[in-house]
Image (cartoon, rainbow, N blue to C red; front, side, top):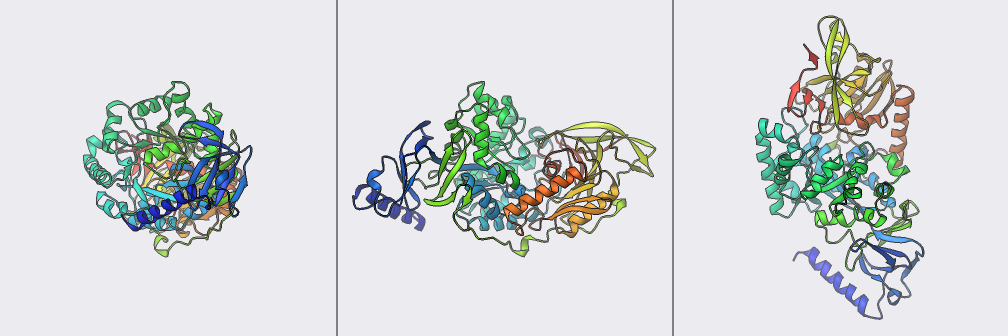
Length: 603
């Protein structure tokens, strides 16, 4: 036994004394509420008694109320376990763990499973460790699932650092690391098997080591069925999840094969409503159905909530409220093997949520380890700001670009080109072909057809390459947008209605050491510095970030005429080469299914 186990044994012995010694009492009793039992899927009247950081019992707690017991009258309200977000990225909110938590805790989310592969792609092991160290300072529970392969597609993209199975011993040794995160390097089963089998060898080695020390492994299986799905499950050690499931048919296939389906319902990708049909229409068991956010912008956290909002949406499509709550409590706890959270029962960690309106999931109070942390949507505890070390800043190692570098070249007066086709609220894309005008050897954008240049500029100082293609469906009327948030390797991605503004936008991102820049007529319309790895900031609070992103989104709509919702998040996913069909990296236009670079100009 280590010191932690000994401490817990002592604390448990004291809990027994409180329960059986009539002179000892609970610290807090939530009295008279409706208890949501996620173990039995029941709702019934019961008190919840807490001592220190633990649950004493759920039931009749009148004998546990003493002169110093804090009694909370929750008549007419509901009490359930704290919510768990099983798959999310702090980087996608552009917030530190601290600022994200300040917005999330009041909504009832008490446990977060962060995947730091974004900062890992930029800064490697050091970047991930910096984020893990921050999380250890916070009162909510934050665990991490770390990547075992960076970049996901070597030879098709350039990351700031490489991460392989050789890095797993150091990363997985940290107690705040739950296991290996989404195994994207083997999402494209056939192309990887045929063209890059060494990725499978390294993946299996990493997974085997993780499993040998009791760590979990998360999958990533978009559009996989049959033999390909089976191969992916086996590559993850036979117990995996998938947060890239987008249809009922996929959900049925994966649930039948033992995959935990992480039904994503975030800010820009919303798949729960289609996935849930496997349960509402086909009657499948929901024990392996789990709600996750994946990517959330601060404004959504502030305006709508976090997991409570996702549970609310799940209830709205026909799921019983208790079953929906199971999908954000006991189901994820079972998937990860958590023994102390996800249910309210004797000896569990006292992460508890009081709900005043069950169908609307209105959170009234939140307790973290037995201490009231939020009430009526406001924190009741102090969480100090966290400043990151300079070693994770100044990650942009690219000199300013020139107009000549960004132009897409072709001969003649007209050119047939390939273009990535945007799909709203999905990170999946299509592919189309268009004929565009050519002037002075450069292919011109065509606003009439909604076809714009889409480029990725390598910014890690490793190759200096610029990938070039076109984009259809962004609905931008003027100017340009560039950002250093571009999944997964996070080079600088840029699109625009003219090359001049695109150059200015890229160079503004470089000058800021990472961030978002919007340009019109060579002038800055709006920008947002993101100096932590070019992904996040410790200079703004969550509320300030929400206001800033709202401001930029409105400027994108009003000044640049962008018709796509959440434009910055959509733009960031068009370089994600683990998701079909076509994507763009610093290497060029990628045919994801063929695992190869294809020419933008069709001869």
